[in-house]
Length: 167
Image (cartoon, rainbow, N blue to C red; front, side):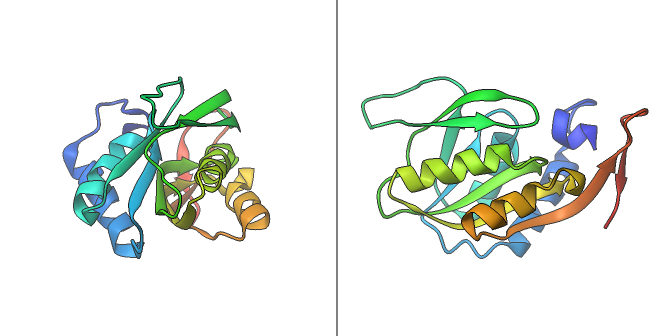
C-alpha cells in the first residue's frame, strides 16, 4: 500500500499501470479534462490521462497563475490544511477528478469546489484507495451528490500502520 500511496518503497511500473487500468475500466470519462492534485494524485492522474486521451489539469499547493485565472480554494484534509490553486479548468468543462486516496474527503471537496468555482461540472470522481473509517466518500456524496468510485477499501492499524483490505 505504501508503495502506491507514498512511493516507499519505490513505485513499480506494474503497480501504477494496474491501478490506472482499473480506474480506466470503472470510469466513464464523459469529460473534457481530468483534474488531479499535484502531490500524490498527479502520478496516477498522468497515466490515466494518457489512457483516457484527455487533457490533464493539476491543482497545486502554491499559487501558479500564468494569467489564465487561477482558482483558489481552501483545503482541510487528513494531511494538509491551506489553499489549493487550480489552473486549466474553463467554464463549461466537464471534469473527471482522479486521486490516489480518499480518507476524510478534504482534498476531493476542495477539488470539486474549484471546478464549480470555475463554472465547470464534475462528471465523475475516481479514486484508487478508500479509507472508509474516515467517511470521505459519504462527505462528498452528502455535500455534492457525487458518488466517489473506488477500487479498494482499506483500514489502517493504528499501532503497526499496516493497511488491511476491508472490501
